[in-house]
Image 1 (cartoon, helix red, strand yellow):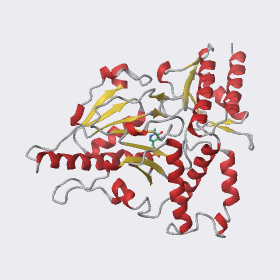
Image 2 (spheres, helix red, strand yellow):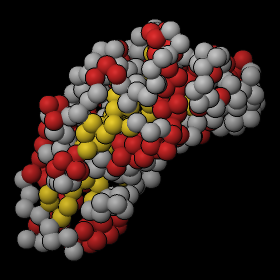
Image 3 (cartoon, protein in one colour):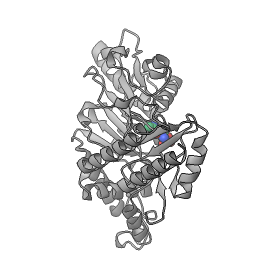
Image 4 (cartoon, helix red, strand yellow):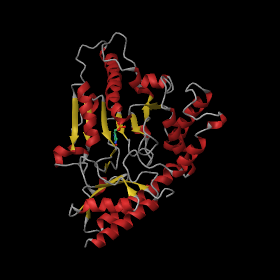
Length: 387
Ligand code: PMP
């Protein structure tokens, strides 16, 4: 690398060097304005162009159908934990009003959650603060004793068509568990997905989802912007006469969509950087190309773990994340020495999340194959030294 460092951090995470260099070049003079992009008005024609181009680039990359809106929101993944609940309850309430003509029954649809790791667990906790009928349809820790697998759908307790939505996290960043399929749910129920740590890493069939969101600071750009992809029929406002909790404007997908993500001052710099990443992906063969490299990187790293006597993956093979690779060293006392030695060689931020310990190598799009190969070489030498 240009700095001599391989950054395996889970987020904020490594960014493509060419993107950082482009930002450096643009910094003092964005598109001949004589100002940086941080200094121009978000109501200027330059920003309007950037806002639209970033959306178009993302739409091209992910082949997002026309009936989906792309929103740039703030507040990170955590804010979406609440925004999802408020927005989608409004949608369900509207359907309820239309079908019961004023509502003789009580309105209390379940919200279905699949808990496969600590981020989906966190989403459940936030939902419960706002609503009293949260149905945890799957809790892997309860079912299996620990996170690290995704039991088959026959073991889930989904509510069926009565649910306001089904929520899951496609890639659990802390636990290293990634879905290898899209859950097959009742087609009338919106499927909601947290793709914070794997959006743009592989092809997604967007049309299977009601909405998808992703905090930028892993695979997209710097922290500060959250990408939301939402189907247009989920942009509802409550009927004026109906008493549902109001959605604060800053959390409302409808408000953001109506204002083309310019309701208030957007995080201009984060969106600018994200667009540079979109361009970088497009220039390098798009999602198809990066998906192939991601597969090779993850396969090599998991093979190294499999062929070793001291490294161990706690994750069931079929759901191992291609983005976040957690592993343990046996005996565990060696982990400290492993991290120290790695750091001395410029391989940084390899420490596992504080809640689970161990080692975690995050190998997002911007981590080149060479970085993964360097890590593998170090792992093999470390093992030799300790056997
Ligand atoms: N979801 C996932 C999958 C994450 O990895 C994270 C952050 N690590 C979050 C949500 C929370 O994101 P934020 O810190 O932006 O609130």
